[in-house]
Length: 417
Image (cartoon, helix red, strand yellow):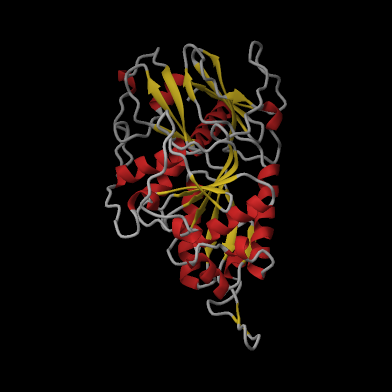
């Protein structure tokens, strides 16, 4: 592997473009995309999504919600939006979202109705999910909330690979089984490099409205302990409140209906903490399709965003240093320069490496010395994919793997000195 690992204080190579600031929008007109997920159902994730969206709106933000639980939509009922009434379309065939309580909303429930199940295979679920984000006339939004289905399946992976998420909020209850499954969901998002914005513990304490006695029905404090163990923010604990259920069933979320209630105030505190965290976050690069030879669509080089305490595997710059060299700038300020043929040889797809044994299937002698990328495409927040001049295009290179390749090459260079 012919790669060099550059010091952050080293001057840029002559002829390199000046640092480019990344745009603030995750998608055109949308500043932040926040997923709300859970490892299992029944923890109140959709209730959290709706009330969090309303709390962000009360801070002055423009907010939309995608009901990403395509097979089990619940957001329309919680917001009092009629089901089975397809949204209007713009002249360019984009959906116009429903509006309720000042929120813009899209859900499968608006297309199918309450009694008509959406019987879909995985690829169709992914197709609808992308339609609900890219095929909607959202206008200008500060936050787009994605209410995910429970688990770690197709929907979560589709989002991680195709949507530039600002991060995910994990919802759990204090119950031990819920915490264990929530931990799995959290680890899944970490694996695909989606930022964990924090943990919300729902249904913590029930206070009897008659006698005032408090009871921890699902135990107490598990979400806080999990956040400490995993090193992620704890955003807040929500009480087990009968009014939350009543308001949701009647299409009047508690943040809108009872803004002075304890639950509503906790939601506002969570929203404030999220907004502050996202405001302080380093801007990552936008999704890109980069034509190598013409350099059209080059992602940018955010040298000013580098910091010694930055992440080692978060790229803040890509550069075609010369026709044979791809440079990647990491958030901690280090730079790796990769020979593109070495990257082709490092492909780990099923055609190049036997999946079960890890045995190399690719014979380096079959790869021409002048092989080069035709196109490089970003995959979510965690990888890039190459379309090579030899026709190969099935390999996905995660940022973790690329950083490891650079580190191994740097170590080898030191040994050879």
